[in-house]
Image (tube, rainbow, N blue to C red; front, side, top):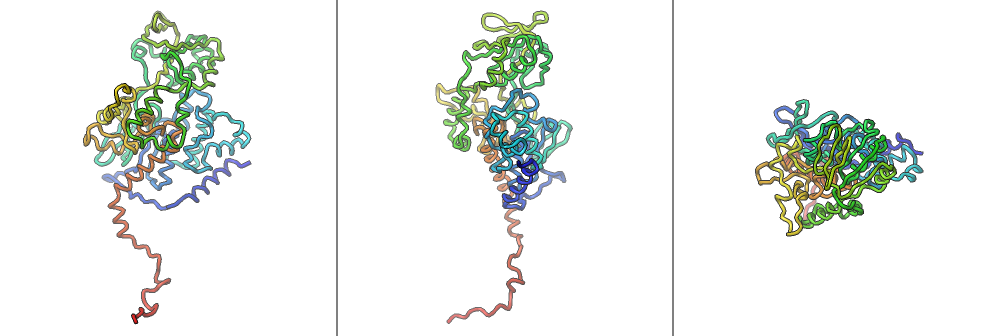
Length: 477
């Protein structure tokens, strides 16, 4: 069996074979003596790491990836993801960018053997994080952990990203690879925040002390996979009762995301006209994703679990030490509640985007749907250029937005599945990095032209063909 060391040697050999053209081509920049990055990537999850690798392959090497989290805790897989396995089929590829030795399968077989891969159903989430950790290590990607970006502002022709520690990173391009909520914030009903003590509720994106829920009555709000995951985790921790409440009267049965997993749709969706993109996404968002069958079964295995479709939460209050949640026709009583009600699209809720938020064009600013096809949620998504860059609400008001690229779930209506989706990485990274490379080259076109004029590397030398003495020129008859 090939070992991990053998695989890593194969990775290095493959990259050598694919390393053409090999020389760097981006002129170095400084601003008042300070270094300038060509690309700063915010987020070291699967989208950020894949983008970094793709840029390095294009010989855009003056890059940096930063992440708020400590090493190994980037993204969701070892923090608030509470599913047992990925939703995505195990044969998915993406971070590998077409290098077979970098695929999840190659790594898993080197670790556990080909037979183990054949017997694997879906990839456990912890195993996926191990793969990403290995991917970062074997490619020696330039990542700085424990670095939160708290503001991004224009700085002349550049962008200035300020860290929580007060450092300022100057960059020509910035890519936001900040995941599901990277274009807004997780949704928490106002009546929960205002009326309940903070210790008595949690969000599915937060650290929750599930052990403390043993013997407790737990309410969960939400119909998605993460709501069911959190309900199952509470049950497995010994909760006395878990009631999951769903606004919809019926859970969705069909998963449109599986339909989207075709090379045609994933690769070409972004080039459709606005009306077709709107119609595709409006239908997909209306269908929504059902929770995976194995996740539902994980909950249903407990007799103390119940789900309640058509039961929205309308209010909350404390009665003594008991949480009372208002529902149509009455109230429910809990000791603790968990919110899994999705997210809101609002750039102003992201500190790194706050300075740009008033200038970012949304779909509702650029597109008016036909009568009867309106959708307020879809209209709240950012309207992106084909390069994943934000666009201006008012032309000329914020030209720096052209250098700020949104590789989060917020890109979905404009670009299809991309940075926040494993399924879309293969296609999204390629489109993003092609656009970044194009912009960087075009901006430096004059410098490249001057470089050509100075180019004087002789291939035909005096030793191989002297300038003189090789005979007389032919004379015409």
